[in-house]
Image (cartoon, rainbow over all chains, first blue to last red; front, side):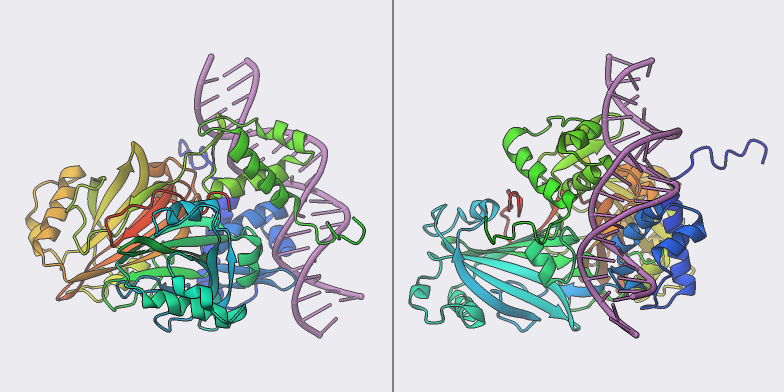
Length: 255
Length: 255
DNA sequence: TAGTGGTCTAGACCACTAA
DNA sequence: TAGTGGTCTAGACCACTAC
């Protein structure tokens, strides 16, 4: 008391609420357990529903909660570690790491991808590229959707392919790619929001936070392919292991 | 017309708004330019301010906008690529890559970090560890704040250190660490929200989205140190280059 | 002091899920 | 059909910045 200015710089209600809820989750709830609904929680804490939702959104962003319309809010399991760059260089599809080919079409790549492909063998900006869609499933859960862009100039053999569409064609494109000698690759990771099609594939709403992993594949002739993989940010922890050891605990469970 | 069910599955207003704004940003605005204020934008589009804000939040999450209280909303520059794992294994502080040591204290590590350190030389759970704080500046902009945890058992020489506090002590801890032989390291990346102290260092509000990069450093004896780096998710693209080539364009500018 | 974005309220209605 | 989370509104006040 006295001169203690305990609340002279009050933190926002939703922030305090998030802290309180976070501690409650640690102590009183088990993974998978269902929380009281939003209207009741808001009443219990004496705040408007919108304020309560702001706190829940933060906790969902941190992977502590899972909310499903029509069902309720449940306590999320720890994030799953997903290996992204463990074993040196390799073409996509060379190891059975949970990726499954879905489809392949020929289409003009988005501008940002074209910029990355510009350093490839005989690549013209408005030329259609083979576009392979894959999804990745880990522990029974869809964690990522990928679009792999392969200019026709990179894999000449593809002009005589038989499968017109579907997984068979996607696998054929990957097979042709693997014939080439891979000289190197590099990756970048950034935050994004799920496009409508990716969101559907990942069982999320459009705009859900995702981690975008962009990979460039190099041959002696330049950039032979580019992939953009969209990982669920709420459930995934991307691991880049030089050693074979896996990080098993989350980085910041209850800091 | 006719049977075209153009709006039979209407997308949310804020989502449509985001798309419209995104296109406007591409066409009519230059980097750094100030947008009209939120009340006017909301009026212009005929929506409530909260709805307009939902669209702006998405665009900020994608790194397209920058909002500052008391100032306004500006068009953000493209994300800066920040090298995170380019040059094989190395102890923190061994290369001049923008990191600056701030301080070092002895304190008990958070539970999640203790779990990672458990495989180290003679590490007891409640034993204080040397905690080094560093910040990383790229192109004049603070992009990351890091806490590096080094158990006393990893660097025995530190008991006789002279600098009691401040950058000098932080550098001393790093120097002792670099005496050891580094056997390997691994990394993981996940989405988080900025703690109050990190947010301040990064010039963001608490709860701002960040990319958490957790690195484990191994010697022959086990886990010798763990670092948790907090990168601004709005302005940073983390790059993991095997080759020395830099990705210069964003992965998905206008998809 | 004026203008900005940040927080908060108390409602309303909608879309979805499961019984 | 009942109950959940998702969207949206029309206000209010606050904290911060720059003049």
